[in-house]
Image 1 (cartoon, rainbow, N blue to C red):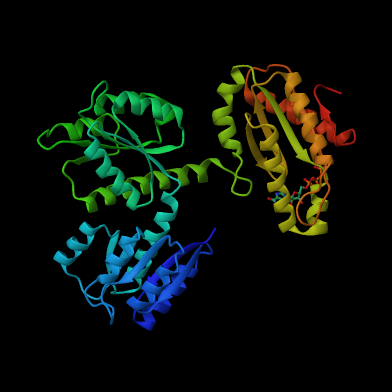
Image 2: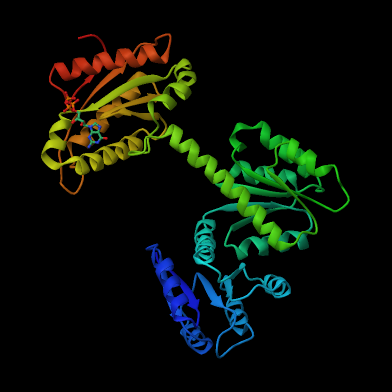
Length: 407
Ligand SMILES: Nc1nc2c(ncn2[C@@H]2O[C@H](COP(=O)(O)OP(=O)(O)OP(=O)(O)O)[C@@H](O)[C@H]2O)c(=O)[nH]1
């Protein structure tokens, strides 16, 4: 999907820079206008715009009329201006513009693009607002929707908890303290005791005068805190900065735990997380593609890489509830809580799928060999070693087969 970005700017140089920056992402399509009238005509055509970047002073609209024009149409608006004026800035932010940027350097334009990219990401981010006052809740909802967040509402802590439990996609909670049934502070404490909500970004809110509450909220696990009434620029800054910190944490975690090519878990993660699963009676299997060197030699490493990715997705499709890791090269390991018979049944099904299709645009046919440790061992390490020995037996005795015990 392409997102149309309306750019209204009379300076040809700035227009060119913005066109270049907006077009850098294939998902954005810049629609360029050099004056108010042109923008008015474009908007009258009726096509929707995802966001707008507008110059405050246009030759045919010198007093910021363009801002009212785009805001009337509910298009998120970022304002560009030649000079910084604090009272003007506050006036614009009060009107509902997302940001106010002075055209000082290329960093300003990069900042504009950061806001546009943020809007795109926010559409997929669900934010739960827990607040008993409907006026306050609506105000927060409007602020969040300006930034294109997907907003869900709750009247009290208990309702918030139920909504969070029912929807694992909620990424952020903005909660008031004084709410009936379960207050905000208790809600945060309950959530943080549950490992499932460790990554939830939580921002606490409270009425003026309660000085100890901010520390209490943060000590109980909230990421940040805002005192009401807050200025909406501060609200947006805190929401975005807390989200960005969480996203950075997730990136670091992914770098540490995932194989960069296939996005499966890596060996270290499998042993770290898999031991507890194994001790509950799970089954370990090791899989290896047959004659993979030949694939690389014949089709090149790029096709080899694509094949590894497609093979991994197929593995995830068939074993959607197993812990799956790429051990390196063309070797994979999975730990499944199913019974040995069920795992072997699914592995047979997987091998049939591999045999019955080709991989990548080069249409490469492959097979794989598998070792399964069918008897419970004292550690996951021992089970994987045994499965690895059986895999070696599968290779030695002809490949494209599963071995479950010593041959
Ligand atoms: N394209 C690609 N190739 C890789 C990657 N990691 C390892 N390989 C290749 O995988 C091949 C493994 O070859 P071998 O260990 O000889 O195994 P094989 O050819 O699959 O033979 P058998 O396992 O005995 O059936 C080597 O050519 C490696 O270079 C990777 O990330 N991408």
